[in-house]
Length: 211
Image (cartoon, rainbow, N blue to C red; front, side, top):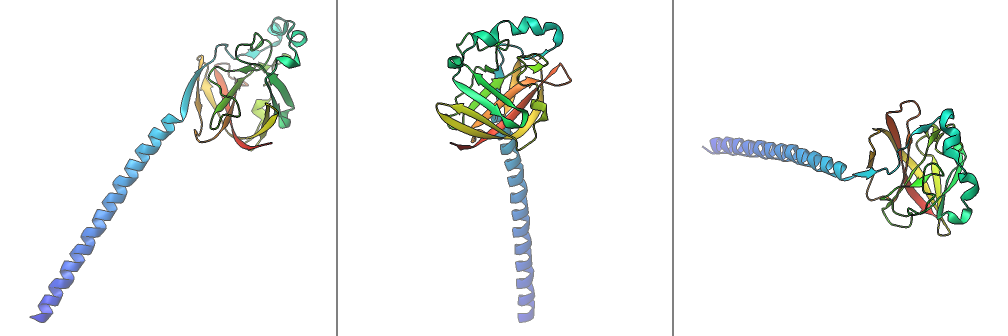
């Protein structure tokens, strides 16, 4: 009788452990699904839509003279509110405020509507520039950059050091999707694709330190 009770107890405990195992597996499974759904929603929240008031196009030799106008002689250093420097491709160029008459691609790289300045925590400074062979094609060599490349922005007597973490293509529609980590202070650079005139390229940099 006692042996039978012991066997029943073992069977009961075995069933209990198996049931607990099934419950844990089910919990982890549905927890994983919930986590995946949550992450997908988070990814969507990271994507901001911006509108380019000026279309970023490749400038070729035929329109070079028309786009240069007298920009290099009329734009003065005191018009700039900040400077972008990318040592790997020898870029050093100032940018103006949104309301400046020189915030145009025919003059310069441009500050895009929706940008925040580098001193805004978790903000996003967005700059766009031409690609091509003109003297105003300041972003012509962005395609040469690799992950880990540094870009520096000088603003209000401070230098912000950013590191490139991603680049991706987007269709040229006048609206650009910027996917970034909202918990990082970001620099975004936009130019047209090097070989496909129906696409633009977005380069994402994240702030590393401030000097």
